[in-house]
Image (cartoon, rainbow, N blue to C red; front, side, top):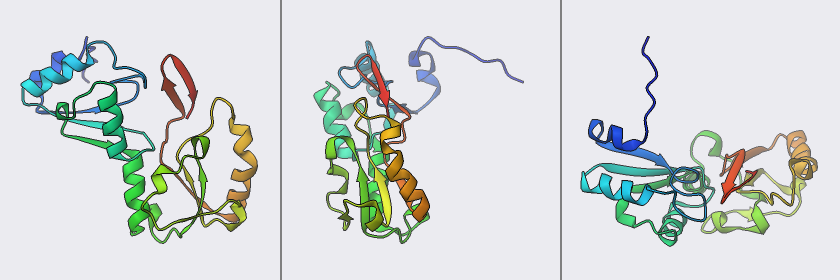
Length: 184
């Protein structure tokens, strides 16, 4: 049995690995600004020829996340790629060839923040207003903190009764934005 080793940061592991997968929200930034020391660390990893892939639960596509990180001061050359839950969801919905996406259907009931539909752009989907017309649910976000889970229950109960699949493009239970924590 090995002992747990606690570290003071990634610098301690830098020489031991050629690449790093680093989470975006809550690790690199808080949605408003990078955490202290993060930009310097990413620059140092780049100087040391380390490969960095940013991984995110974000319900947005990879290109959106990359643009957002640029706005927050991250250079696109600081990492090799951005992989997001939203990108994986978009690709799955586009192809509908395997796993939960296989033959999912075209009639989508969308649950999102403020009616945001970006993730559905470029997809052959029909967004329906009534859950009774839906073939599946796509969840890209919630209107938290204005809405609570209970506000979504009537729709979700109907979906369960119909046996609909739900695809959640942003699987965070709790989201961090600045110093606030909200329902994901």
